[in-house]
Image 1: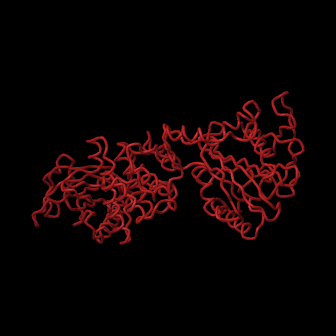
Image 2: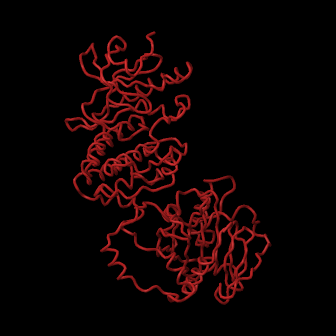
Image 3: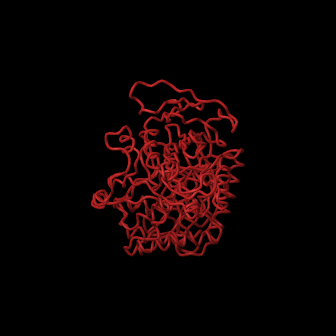
Length: 555
């Protein structure tokens, strides 16, 4: 067994009696890459030294080597000119070394660093080649798991190659990390991977989106000051709009959707990248972009065409609430947020997070098909568990308010769940499953409050879009608006207004509006009002008052 070589003295080392190391040409968290000469075939090769092997026990080292060999064999099965070929895997100094095809040219990371940014059409060309390599890998049953600018190589002759399939499999194994070092580049890991889920082809596409963002903008979209804050950004935050991406921008946004199911498939992404490479803004990509940016001219024109809103005047008590909660066209100077508001859903099923969505959708669809009360159970839960079932008899107590603090005919109530709100005189609390309603007529007109301390969606808008996908084609559902907004200084908020045709409990046309937002602690609140269309103008004014005087638990 040859003795360990330091980083300074390994140059000139002969591995396996065949590969003589030259200079270091790259390095990363898992190891370094050497330019080497194959003295048997007389060719230049690249040799990857896995430095992580120095810091594991003997048993773990064997696992590390076995997994490296397995992944190298998998990568070797991929026959595509855009995949760096793995020639050999060997062991030296008690750790694996991987011998690969040598590419004469920089990585995308180095090229972007040198020039500052990559031109959008060139980035689209690079992305198209990387996607081709990924499609070939996925067809062979191999996931890359570590797509990032440093693993995209740009040959001097124009070729684009993807490398490091073998290293990627090691990411996440606690036996191959050491204090102060995280394996892999966490700002390029898809949200589902950060959450601990199994990766799939869509995970590699997300990483491609983050890679292209970095190429055109010159900075990683999610990198923060610490690994924890970076992981949090990947999972919960949307990237700033890629201002320099031109026609590539909607493709990047589509690839960076948080939910894997919301990302385009590889063949769709390929068509989008081809359009962007040829300078065309891909129309197909817009279907994956929840919000659209508008220019200042469009904003001014659209604002001028907007009719005066029905309801209270600027001097009415609810005017301030209307301006605070009504949706607006996107501010073109603000960061682009590809996902936003969320939507009401149905009561939660017993048995933990995740299941309620299936039960909720089934209940909604059953109502739609049967002509029942479609939106009678729009939200998924009550509060923190204090409220009882339909027989719960606890009534909130009215509280005294200063004269003039509430409009005439309104009172403030302190709900047993800990929140406080204003309701019209005569409206009483009742439970509808797990939902908390305030109503004067058993639900024909109602305020509904829903609270979820562990929401399943990244933000309210994504929840709304998810629900709307199914219900928008049924029960004569008609969207009035569905936009991001800011409520109670929370930018993770959404406003959803819609109409539908009720066939059961309260037959006839009905109208509803829902304000959804995340509190500082991540709790999701939904404030919902519904009424017959014939009394909507009054209901809309009441909704503004409810929003203005709402107090969440602890406020």
